[in-house]
Image 1 (cartoon, rainbow, N blue to C red):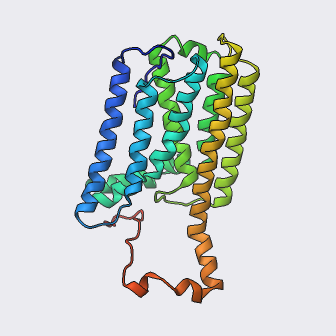
Image 2: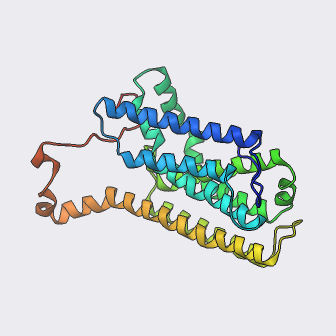
Image 3: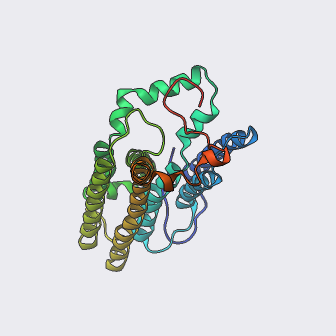
Amino acid sequence: MILAHVHPGPAMAPGLLELVTVAAVLLVAVLYLLAAANLWRRGDVWPRWRGASFAAGGAGVAWAVVGSLPGGPFTAHMIQHLIIGMAAPLLLVLGRPFTLALRVLSPGATRRRLLVLAHSHVVGWLIFPPPAALLNVGGLWLLYRTELFSVMRHNPWLHAVVHAHVLAAGLLYTFAVSQLDPVRRRRSPVLRGATLLTAGAAHAVLAKTLYAAEPPGTAFTAADLHTGAQVMYYGGDLVEAALAAVVAASWYRTTGRAWMRERHPAAMGRGAPAATGYRPPAEPRLSARRP
């Protein structure tokens, strides 16, 4: 996905890169909603809030690309960074697009290829939380603490490449830490939580360094620099807290409920699905069968 250069300040007509980005985002969102509608038509359960979350993530990316962002140049850039690299990836991952694809696809060559890709060693390493965090936060340190940010501001194509990396790395990191979709090997909540804390600390330290000193080769006003660094610091904390809540909720689903069943079987039995005869369909596993 191409992410185009944002021009803070007065509104400007969208360029080719901006239009291509918005078109790509809308296409992905429409494909997702069509797949979800297919499940609803055949009577399968697919929570509507997942579709709303995915659509909101796509809308956030589109707005960050073509919308009029508030503040000075550095503040507007940091708002864009917060949306594209952190908030939108969380909303998109909460939509569980990989699970949706497995639910919609019929047994066949396409589904088998998707499963082979999900089982590959390359994907296994990419969604291992520590390397995913290093790719995500390490890329930000490289961007803001070298001349890359200064060069990028004057090269729209380089700006597009860098922000495409920010979005991709944010998606990969959020997917690796949350692990909401079925994966070949589910990592422990301890590892994912420790990775989240470490990456959050590195992100916060980077924001503090930007509050003290602008990126090399740039010249922003002190007020703009400080506001942008605060957006990065506090906004990043907010998104990371939401991601931590997702990790905690997944831990409870896999561990907390089992713990409660062992210690309070009678209480957990009341209101169980067996009492009503309804059992919600299980989420798909990584197998060749249709879920």
